[in-house]
Image 1: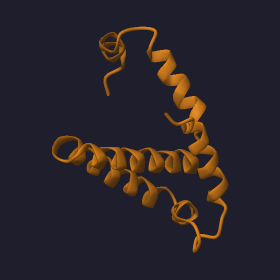
Image 2: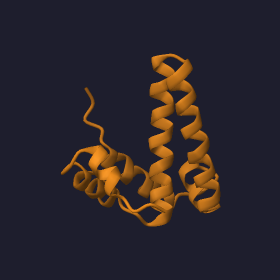
Image 3: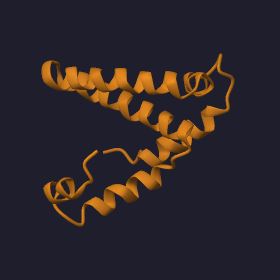
Image 4: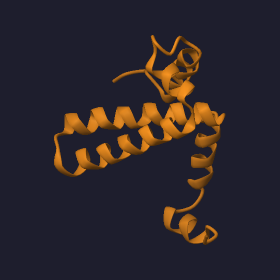
Length: 107
């Protein structure tokens, strides 16, 4: 069991965001802006789905790690701290997922 958390990942992304883009993938994504980072997040989401449905457990673990990392980069660029996402999730646990979904405004 690891003691590494998403908060640790958030700090690493934050630290590396201002590095030299020629030396850091995180800095390169941040410098490229939201369109590039969001596109990469989407690619990782698709790869995670593929791994979940047709590949090995190890592939799923690796793709899930990529997905979480790229999500943290997108949140960084958007200025959304992890604690806001966690607060949203926490608030949703007060009721069943089905009740929460039924209560959302339709778009």
